[in-house]
Image 1 (cartoon, rainbow, N blue to C red):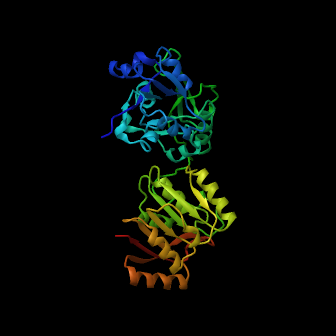
Image 2 (tube, rainbow, N blue to C red):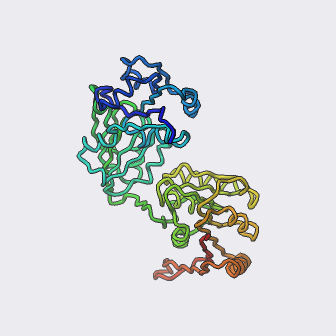
Image 3 (tube, rainbow, N blue to C red):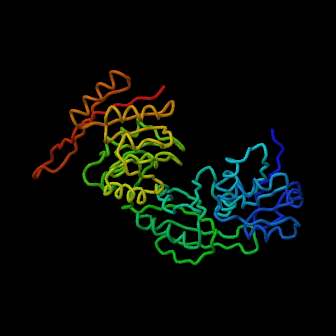
Length: 400
């Protein structure tokens, strides 16, 4: 193992006095300290060279590599491996060259202030990330701890809650926890007006009104929640499709012929950090997919303008592929070749020609071939009758 030369130290609002003696000795012995303006103010008694976060922030890795051979300390708030800079550094520098020094972080402090069990809540960050991603976590009775981007972020989250029928949700902003300037602001989403410090932690206790929008993480959101032009994977078929695609943490989906993005959006909602690339040649449908992703809390959906199979070239290798449009033998061959081992592929067909192709592919490659027929009850004059949706032939298989 390489000799550690880089120390990544979590530090709180109480500065050096809050560190363990061993960690404090590391900071005081440093030749170089890298951190933000606030971090440097907490350690100004040390005689090390101070380097501020570079701009753009991605230049940090080059800055650190340039200091190799010296005793280098990077200061981060709280736990440097929990939604913090430590994880990013550890992906690019040999972990054997790094020593981490965690400190009690904002989540633990906030949970203690609120009297909440860490095991019974969701932790997330919108610091430097799209704030809309918290929408996917709005559930009745859910407790959320959110690292926010700035002073305006709690108000944005209050608006999301109110629009979805969670206006009675209780919100608490905690700032400068553990320091002399610690502050707390308590209110309700629908009447939130506080002017709060930036870099705060927001605690939300979700309270649903009787007419609140219920957006479960399991697949099968109602069709009405999506902007669409009528051509989409309908609710019941979408639920069956996602069950075969099996969303998993951090996994990547190729959604070929994404249309309004309903499958890609539900894939990303189905597991934390799940990612999706939607390939769609029509600009109007890509616009709908982008709007749906934003409204339903997965703003990181990536959309590509292109025709398949050519548009698949050069894309990151997927963990799952859904072919909802543009099905051909060539598209299947390209997707199957790119798919990771244990990857899942699902193709849906509604035309006789596409169904015939799935039959041939099933004979050659195996998997599961099913026909999904859905009928919905609708008014029929003064009575009620069944209206059948167009049947869907679905082929699914796992790459072994």
